[in-house]
Length: 432
Image 1 (cartoon, rainbow, N blue to C red):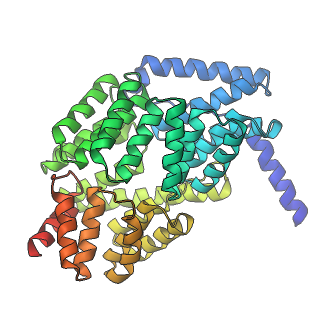
Image 2: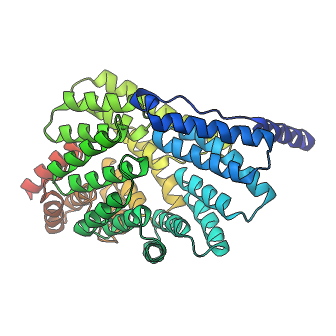
Image 3: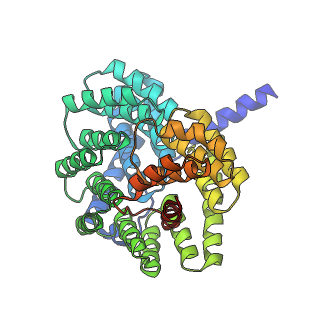
């Protein structure tokens, strides 16, 4: 039996080494862009280089980076993660201390939500090259996700001192948001956008984050302006299209919102956008369509997880996302199961603690929610959705003064958040 397992493993490894990963065709306007034509030309050149010389480290790393970027653009993470990881591991097999390969592997693990593993690899890479800006960015990301916020700030300062650019400014913004400084977060994200090249995917992704900050502070005009700029600079950009749909939600124009989200998902494989579309169908009275799409989302996330069990190179942890999806399906038991799986991985992360607290709220087990809520609020984050959740939990645990002040803080700027949560929060606030 042991010999059979070894043989099977060797067969799988041999197949993996011989597997090729051509680029998947894009959809929509981006499939006709000059950028896409350039990407295909570059990818084919790198693939040809590696066919001629499989030990061409420079081409392997460049191709891995291209696959990682293509995953960001299209949302086809499972396919491109496997593609990138194949070449990264090939480099590391021959050169375990290759800094660039270690950096890309850490980045991939972060993308797959394997934050502890990604952080460990990033820490190793940092000892090899302590003067690289990007590696400190990965240390920021890993420490944020593991709940080590003080270390994240220290690494952010180091990153910015080495190279102030779009990547360092955006991380400064995120940390300021975590610590409740929305004006400072907006200021830093503006710097990030201005430091990038107009139309480049990282720049327009950063612009989307700026728009979302404006939405959370109730400035919908500024948010809409940046979504429109993103679409102008990068036509058919799915995240910007979905952003305009989110703006339409604020005025309860669900039909218009649905049209934007349906357009966004045609060229972008993103479960969070699909989940929002499912909720829009429900809000617009199409329960059957909402339930059907939600079931597909849950099946998709579970299938991705199973693929990860079979191949560690493509495993994407999605337990926190699954917890919220199961809540929408009113399956509280599975929601709690997945929330606690994620909590056991990252017990100090504020977002994970918020998720567990909210699942207990939905289960009407309000007192169990309180200790998780306390951790979720420990950085003084002012995210309006978090504060609404907190205020509702306080109200159910008979902490009326705290509930009132928390809900007032959450709603004071009329943020553009989940409409049902907002309505519930407004009604509870009126009753206090």
